[in-house]
Amino acid sequence: MNRSDALIEIDGIRKSFGDFQVLKGISLSVQKGEAVCIIGPSGSGKSTILRCINGLIPIDEGFIRVGDHRVHEMKNEKQMRPLRHQVAMVFQQYNLFPHRTALENIMMAPVQVLGHDRAEVEARARALLKKVRLSEKAGSYPGQLSGGQQQRVAIARALAMHPEVILFDEVTAALDPETVKEVLLTIRELVEDGLTCILVTHEMKFAREVSHRVCFTDRGLIVESAPPVELFDNPQDPRTREFLGQVL
Ligand code: ADP
Ligand code: MG
Image (tube, rainbow, N blue to C red; front, side, top):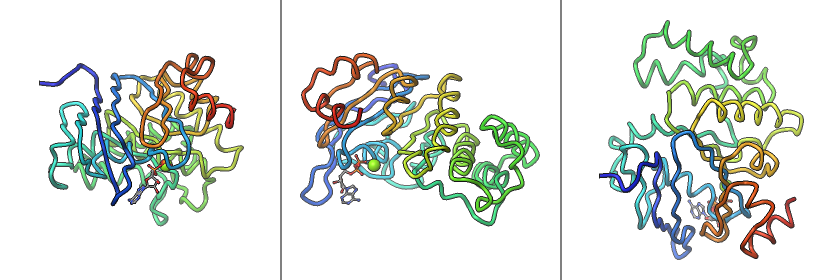
């Protein structure tokens, strides 16, 4: 039995690296179709939360469920595989294969990992390129694309696996300011289409306009979690106020 009808349910997760406790009891639920932003100072545990959700890092204590996958109970890579297909992750470094075109990068996992029909995968990959406004770049290699364009290919590649959830970890942090906008626009459109996602971001305007809820993390805890208007206009915790005072 699941504890709630949320798509993602996280309860009391703790994680230490050596003597250092990075997560000190994180709880969070995300409904289907919800976009949750995580903001907070560098080193507060934001990336670690995302990595725990898709099983990249085993937790010490607590409960994590994504759909029907009980992540905290998984013991090995084989058990993780179905979870990884459901939970895509997009990183700051897009890591496209340099010797494959944009189209081939998007097609690789569905063909090689899921064993789907090549022609169907190609049709879907082209539709995804259109979705991220890069139809004309299907035959381009990553080195021929701007950072923002490469990141949009990486997002299309994640979508090609039909994930239930996408975790975005500071996907615009390494981009030139002029290409940040186009990547945020793509994510905004996906959220409007009903994609469930958790986004770690420093883009406060984006968090405010696009997300349904914002969580502020500090030193391994979610200090405050609220709809963006409440969190930005009327933060309750002094640590949230201090952080927003520095970044806004
Ligand atoms: P954020 O994404 O909020 O900047 P992280 O989740 O990356 O923070 O890291 C939180 C803390 O955990 C940092 O102090 C970081 O140095 C530490 N940390 C993260 N990953 C590891 C690891 N694999 N081994 C040791 N320490 C780590
Ligand atoms: Mg991080």
